[in-house]
Image: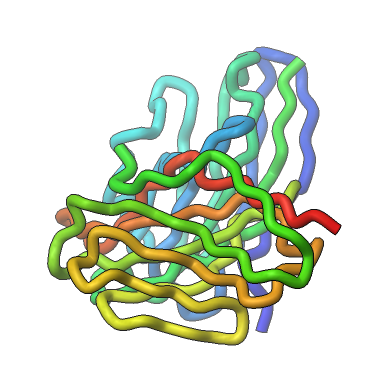
Length: 116
Length: 112
């Protein structure tokens, strides 16, 4: 069975340009997460979806970041406009159902963004 | 904030057991301990999780103390490919379900 798929793996853009990241979760997983990971640090949650509903977006910088999960399957995270400080790895994860007592998250390989 | 404390780095000789400690003194009764690892340029990989009993799978063993305030991840025969950052996470429940907070983890170097 395929794991979490993300694309692109790498992206280099100039500041003020828009960028989008795509994630396809494991089939049947209701919960989808976007994380941001800066160099040398652990991942930090940006947004969490239960099916198509964004249930926790408190850490998403809404002035420039947006996300969607149409039809409750794959998801897109967008940054517009990108800033130098947005250079990081963007990770997508999915889990079966976060209301379960123990719900393991499975991560994709991430997209490494470099803003010049 | 992460609810766990881990040493920033550890070394282990190839072929020996790697024992990675984690303190989680404020863990609550229904919170699970999860371990993930992250090899350079990859996403975090799930290893194992447990509530209060010791757990073992094909990758590792998880030993949780009786008071649940600390745990140890054991890689029984470390190889060079086990060099990675290891994250110990205590899950918690918010209004929407289970959630994680990652700390900086332990960087394990397996030496030949």
